[in-house]
Length: 327
Image (cartoon, rainbow, N blue to C red):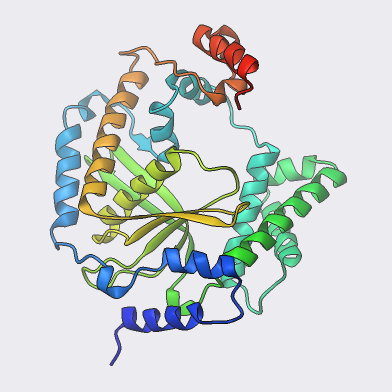
């Protein structure tokens, strides 16, 4: 009798040979699938070892915390880039903007496309997603209702175009692949004094006993930037700490370009992610307690940084960027 992994592998092979796939869909599928013989079998003690090492590396830090420290990919990226921008953003109330709204609606459309039957067109999914968001009555709903009819129509059009590109370039998801969307993961260390959290855009596959099989996929509606790899490596760490088996592959799918970047997960990758996480936690605690000054690391983010006007390194970077046409 075929195992779950073997059944999924046979269906993937059948889909690869499906003549109805576009060349882009076939290329994506070839990259996000990992043949059974290439999947890693991990030790049953891996989860406990990594949790022990994480707590060992942070045990001297937790006594400084009066409130729990919540750590997501956003905090990790911020503290490893411009800490001055991170502090400025932490002190500002959150506001929805059109690019973020567009991304939220797109992700909701992908979620609906996986679970709704029969299949809907891109435009129908956008209508369903927008209606569902508005019915929630939350901050995003208020932002959408505050836009003009023309602005909402433009967002709908842009998301529908993105979604159609996604359908044209990403292979159709089969139920046998166990696709999930917006999969949450949370890890509590030191009895809740430090909490690591994340939410995966899309996953396919699943582990079989100690054999890696799940693929974590982040759907990107912008350009490729280096920290996308770090984000996914952090997610691999979360998956290992929650499930006990690391994912098989990490993938960033860039919707506009219809292309995917993949990375295989092994223990070296997990330990690199663990080192970055523990070093970042230490830095976040120092910043919270005012034991250090925020490092200023100018970059393209200076263009929208709320404190750029009073930041000498930021101003210098912007002036240089203006002369050389940087973006």
